[in-house]
Length: 360
Picture (tube, rainbow, N blue to C red):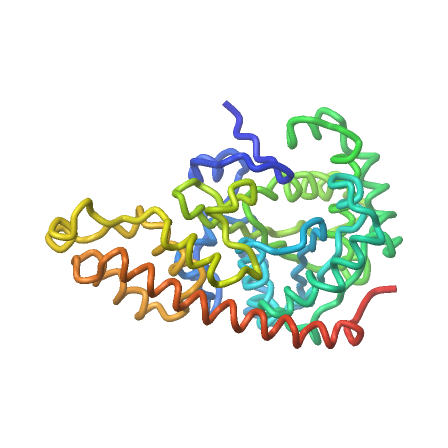
């Protein structure tokens, strides 16, 4: 049976190994890259396509770009956005020309958000939030889809080479909104190459794989354009605090948003699924099971940078010296520090939005 990954839905993906085969992905190897970041080192980044090309650009200091988009349909971000920004910042620090697009056309076509409202949300919150999460605004080019006619032109060209059956195979359906969104994203991904043909990497969650698949198919057919095939990097989902495969806003009690009041986050963490034993005596004797503990996963993916510190916690928990309650209190403390810093940086970033470089 085919695995259908829907970037607009909330379908759960239960077998990452299967996805490697289904989408022709390459298992990620952190040995490719110098000073791999936290989520690269810890297996959160798990797959990619043609990442060796990007690694070669870094090693030989050759030009390449990294690109991602902002969907301004919501009023908050989630932890998946944080991982995208972390990977963008990694490539930015290693020489990538960095681009952030505001998908105002896609939000209008697929989410029903007006162009005006999308612009307001992006400038008031989403762009400052990406900066607050670590993106260097001085090294980033921003643009709105609706204002970039080069993107629209590429999207139009792509639409002439992709069939309805291909859309259905990639997305499960081919309604006009999804078609418009998909071809516009192809325009976005190729936009930096209009200035100069060079490799590019798109770091995303695995739910965005259909977009990359379609873009790569188009590039192979548009031989006359001489585009360089786009590379991709995929990270796993952050599990929901109740143990579901993916945090989802449809279950707010198990999803942490950015920003979110600490008291709210605290209540969610205290109710989270743990890998602790049924009794304290049993826990002390057998130790906890970090692989089944959503709080440990939160620490691993997002809240603890130092590998030695994480390994110490792992050993304390598996030995039974640290209880599930103590692990939760540690996560609450770390989350307090993170949310406080994020809120402070968000306020600071909002003051500098007018100074950012936007493509006109």
